[in-house]
Image (tube, rainbow, N blue to C red; front, side):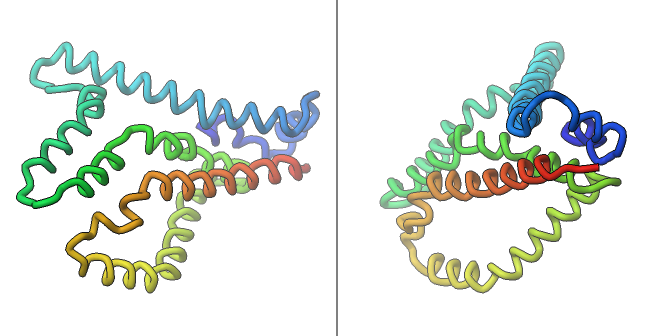
Length: 200
């Protein structure tokens, strides 16, 4: 979606025309974000859920639709935890409650298109492919740099039988929200800076 909407901004004719639109950089930036990071995911998810519901309604062998499965995911996980043969499942229940909350993943849905919007403004050709390759490269570098710390964390954490009492697990929603927010803000800043400095 970002490439289809804004991929031509790196072309001289279209990009020059876009720069002449009587709107500030902030207004253009906000319109980009609202369209690509809010409206597009909302419409795509709505269409997906609608089509899936219609298919399951027409075909009884389809089973439950995705919306129903997601809405009942927490109950399924909680029932599974209750069936475990453990003395104290309070920490595990808290962890399961946190990771099964659909609100935990809203920022991921919002930020999914941001790398591709930045790629549409940075790369001149093969924008989607280069964006994906860049994300893979960044992930590899980050994995290599963080591997020693992750190994040490898992060695010390998983040796402890009370693993779900660890601060990482008890504060997982907060940690996930903060990390996702930082990443999204970095992408937003990069998109705004690139749009502001766009010249032909």
